[in-house]
Structure formats: structure tokens, C-alpha cells
Image 1 (cartoon, rainbow, N blue to C red):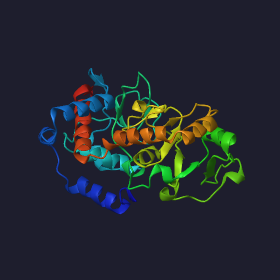
Image 2: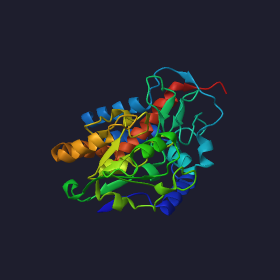
Image 3: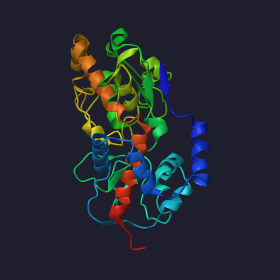
Length: 315
């Protein structure tokens, strides 16, 4: 089994190299060169994703307080600056750009680049880019078969948000669950505290709990690339992963927002492994679109191209 994730040292070396020595300008040529690598059908799917991430369709004012060149002076969280500049460097350095970095669960007042946004019909000011990749976009390869895993659900994490507290109050200690908190600060019940568990150890279990944190559940991408199944309520926040397009019973096991049906759902799917295998197949097909580097590069550039074409600034 192989776990594919970004090496942190190389990540910083690469991104500071891009800031100081990376090619700048020429976004039209870059986009054209990437488009030439894809079929008409593939380009149509990429364009659909671009419209999903950037819903702006009419000229809309932004603050004008920041521009592309400001991304070359990264502040904490630095990764957001790096990953936006990776693509924004191909555009005019003085091009105005608004961004709200971090775990964002509100819609900004002006069209802004964000990692996450509420799932709603009125979130067009939240323009998604693939940000915080080192934490969120981890891939599992060569995982052992689903049928060889334990008929249990594993859950680890920091338990300080109310919705996570509610889940643990309901289900900690249940025989179908192996639950524990890896963070003692603010922990309401000492018996929940346990040692951290490696990602590889999680994959001994057929089912893995995936609860939203400050925004989305950071473990969802690697779970869906593995041979285990994510168990979670319907998402309320989305990122580049397009969580609103996920379907319960197709890509993951959906439980109620108040978690009351967890036992019934786990019991059902343990008794119906053939349905679990279908979910796994659908999950693998879904995540595959995010592992094509050239498609991700093109999609990111086209999102910024559309964003810049629709925003205006009076400054």
C-alpha cells in the first residue's frame, strides 16, 4: 500500500522557487497548450467544473485592496498564498484579486478566492481554488480489499465542535464503533482520549467516520480513494472536491444530521457487502478526476481567467 501526499520540505522549496524564479505572464498561451492535451469531451467536463467553482457571470466589483503581486508575500496560512500564486503568476501582477484564506464557512461580501464555501444557491462570491492541498488531497493506493477488513467503523479526531461532541455523546462505546479523541484540550470526557492512529491503521476498518470540522472533513478525499467507505451526514460545506455533488448511498454511507440512524446503517451495509463494493467503485471513479495534474492545472487557470474577466475595481 502507498499513501501519496506532498513532502512538506519539498513543498516549501518548490513554492518559494516559484515566487522568486517562476515564469510569469502568458496565461493565454499556457491555457491553450493545456487545452490541446484534451479531447472535446474532456474539455467540456473541465469547463463544467470551472463554472461550478466560479459562478460569476456578470461584472461584479471587488475591494481592489490586494493584487496578484501581493501573493508573493505569503502570510500565515502560507500554503493558501503559495497555491493561489502557483496559477495567478501567469496573469498581470497588478490584477486586483480579493481572497479570504483559511477555513471559510461564510460567503464574502465581494467575489473572493476561497478554499471552502457553504453549499447554497447564493454563494457566487465564493470562488473555489484547490487550496490546502497538502492536508486535504491525500491519496491511498494499493489498499487491501474491502472484504478483508473489520466489520467496524473507526473514528479519530479532535472533538471540540458541537456537532462532533453530539456524535460522541451518542455513539462512544458502541460495539460497532472504535471512537477516540486525539486532542485532550477542551475534551469534555476523559475516557474519549486515545493515542493517534496512523492513516494506514484506519484502513483495517471497512467504515471510516468523516465528520466536518471547522469546514469540510479533511479525511474524506483519502477515504474515498481507499477500499474503506466514508460514513457521514450530507455535507453542508464544499471545496474543490465538489462535495455537493456527492450522493449518499452512491459515494458514501449517509447518516442523518442528528446521527440517530448510525447503528441501523452500519448493520445494513455489513449485511450487504455487494452494495458496499458498488459504493467503493463509484467513490474511486469520482476521486479519479482530481489526480490528473494537467487537468487540475487547466481547471485552476480557467477558474482564475473567468474570475478576472468578471471582477471590476475602482482603485
